[in-house]
Length: 339
Image 1 (spheres, helix red, strand yellow):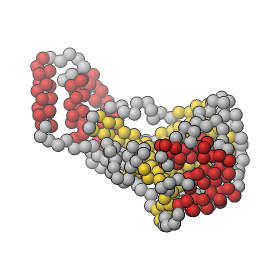
Image 2 (cartoon, rainbow, N blue to C red):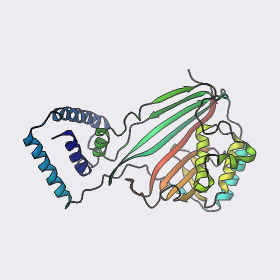
Image 3 (cartoon, helix red, strand yellow):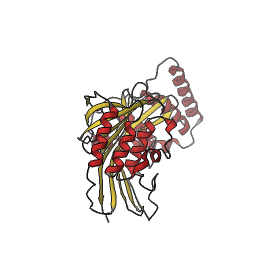
Image 4 (spheres, one colour):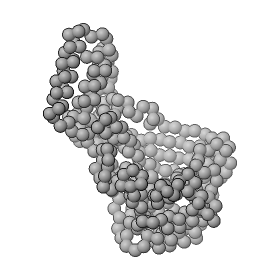
């Protein structure tokens, strides 16, 4: 069978993979088994790359014809749902979101400045993202946690490092499909890059003016995209800069005025911290999505940002409601640049 024909058969039969159930072994055993399978597959593919005799080609064509005929009468199951994170549990939520967030903003304005252990703004953000590959009608998904750490100097020099953790799959079969097709490529290798003065990668070169944070936040985040765009702008800022109490308070006051903002209540975030959750639900971003910002009720510090599909997943292989992405803001302080 030629390599192209082999790939066609694999693509057609792949979604019916019988290994799509819960894993029967631990992660180390599965990785060893997977390495052996892939090594054997590569060796077999190399042997199949040699010119095939006419009899083998005819037999392969007949097999493909039978497969196509069978697929006309057999419903091929879709791949299993991706292993999305558990939903956070909220309590309370009564009252006005605007009043509650405005009160938190007042506390944020009175909070002390972060301790100064150096001149570099130091941020650590733990993220989780749903990576999806669409092949015709079939969608394959994996979840990939990552950790971003940055040091930004007053002259806009600094360093950024990114480390991806092991991808998470709903089954061993789904993992085999992704790795066999090399769908990650080299995109999961850790990265670290230093930047000279003035070259630190950022959307905004300077901190926002406390007198007009609203207009400043919407540079690059058009208001016409909907209220959720303002939450995205604030989280983009938190991903780039250490927010002073005054800037944090001003940003929270902007969010408090958003139409459709709801108070979800008190929640324990994914780092075990308690905060208040505020959300905007919209389909302006493509699918009906709830954008949730979690803040510390005492200091106004940003704790997390979550995106959850509420009623429709489109072609994404997730079961709604489903969290499709979150960020947890773990560290925001001043320090020195490590050597």
